[in-house]
Image 1 (cartoon, rainbow, N blue to C red):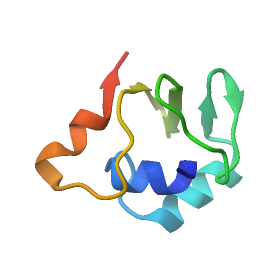
Image 2: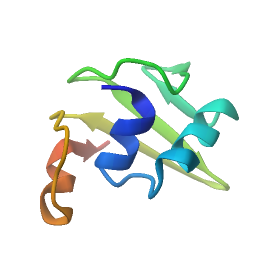
Image 3: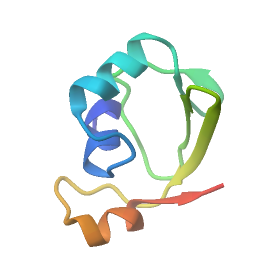
Length: 79
């Protein structure tokens, strides 16, 4: 699954266009490297997102094409 779509489906970022912009600006890195929106996310990847002065690090535990709000947090775990 594409990185921008994963960020939207997992609800780490609200909209796919915002996720795409964050990737283009270099604020999203996967496994320590800055990643583009087209990066193919795999289980076990570590994603780091810079939100202003706050940084969020998560590990991908599950990849789902669609999910409900309640089960979206099962797709990742905070590090």
